[in-house]
Length: 433
Length: 187
Image (cartoon, rainbow over all chains, first blue to last red; front, side):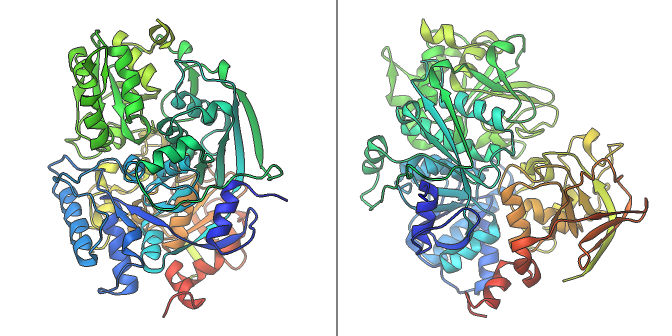
């Protein structure tokens, strides 16, 4: 029996020739990432368990990216950044991206990619559920808690139950107005918020392999919203082009075998995809955009690891250029690199920043910002019973701040089209004109 | 490991996500400072919408007023308990509030793993959907020897699923103690 890409990577990192779903194995970790929300707790457990003066297993493999509660006056949140700094100093860690310096990056999942920590064939754990994003590079990546992260800091290993794999294949080509966000919302709607629990979500097919790395990241990013352990896409030339621009570190490309065993397989025709939203208050509450056009909105939010990459802002800018938004519209680049690109990239001679400003949108600084609500002074945090269209990943009650607010998850195209009209709007006619 | 767990039930529905268990604005407190971490007990389950908080009636605060601990020590949930974020603050806040066990139809993966590896409480599974059978405030007893749950208030007993492969970690206390026992890390 053949193996899936997920099984092959895990076997290789456990020193085994083969593994099967359900096997409990110990794997060697290539990268451990943590951030300001989970780093302090992780470091406290590490010291308690391995000793005050213990050293991390491999300082080159620890990556610390503050990104959650950054631009806030909250004293506890700022104290937590100080704890990161202190630990980095004690351990002399080379991969730290400090707040308030030129080295600050922003949202960890995109920063990992941009700084060259996502490499085909590797195993990456992070103290954040959207760590599944890195699977877009043909690697195994998943989210863990503070305890598991502290265990890795001390040992470089973690136990993993080998997941069954689910295969989502898209044949053909996605229409111009369809983004990866529509695709993942569609799949989560089909299988439910626990439809992939304990399983790998493997993406295959011509349509998927035509996507850019940023769009592939969006597909893998929201695996967790279906309960998935990891999302994964085999590396190809698109992947290696991206990786080689970022790092010289070695990597290894794995492919699923023809006779690999899948728990579930579904083939979609990419040409038939339609714009999708997830209605409040669950990412699997799927509806076609065309069925929701009577929903009036109070604001639009474009940002986060899911929807705050350059591709996402190019899409939004394409629609907003030369027009005015009808509702409060928040633009939050995921990282500094994306923010810089907003100044560099132009459509018809106008930079994306100018397009957004002239459209009347508000620009925030790179961080997770209101995707997860955060401290009261967070940029874009929802108030009262606002109705929001957002390119983020979760619309649980209270997720973006106010427990009374209503969040519709959508693609950047749909969010931008809706910002222009003030109600949920199909981007097809804007994109295709 | 205690073989008998007794306490009052706090009943919730399906898909209780980690933002409901501990809203992100509260993720700033220290988990190691004994005084500061009490805040997690105060705000545990504070994000659950009112009508879903403490079924069947709803609008039952898990932790009352300015208290740091809850009078409910066994949480009963439906499917996909703990979905969403990997924040370990979620099982931690429940333990800090005094939770000794959760019984759900199913769990989200990371929450389950965090509960076991961190040794916060035992996440039991039960094939029977208990959410409609048990009312918030019912007096419950879990017997680990018999692997059963008894609702003393209503005189009904249910079989719990075997803890399966994670029993060794649960019995050791947490993943570190398990690794020490098995010789993986030095004791």
